[in-house]
Image (cartoon, rainbow, N blue to C red):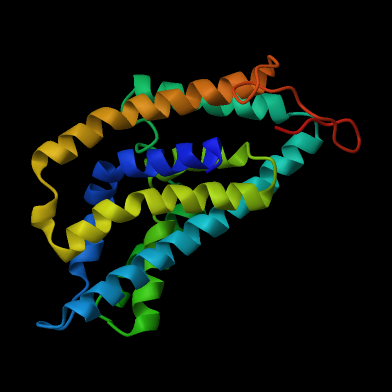
Length: 233
């Protein structure tokens, strides 16, 4: 597997403790028929697939923005600024989570939460998928961190793959939570909470190194020329 995608996968897995707190209540709020475990499995996979779809689309969107920034000659600045912001979020715990949408965006988030709440009682396959899609759109500091990494990928497609890998990394914990909360002990969650800041810091340093373009293979490669003279990471 590509090292950059592996980083996203590990980041998603290590951030699972945060996901359990944010997305776990939503996953547990969706009812499923008793005595039919395969139905619960199918519903769980549908919800997580919807959330994964949202992450993939968000990755493509930030990837397109990142490509535009690189074509404007600001690719290195984007990578360094993204890494610096991630480091700051580790030094000031909860910084990304404290971001609060304002104005029309706040109204939009409010409507999103209302729509999600209304949809939670529906158990049709399309409703379960929609629940996952809406869940993926809710404000989340860990997702913001992943999107910063995705924005520095070489293309929108690679950014989408980065976010898909990140989303898949969160699957084991969230699926285990919905299928049987006892599978996730407090000790396991505590260890995940300890590992997450380390991995976010590592990603931050990697982003800064990529932006510096020191000519170090894999860690800080030089930037090949793009049409118009812009660089690409």
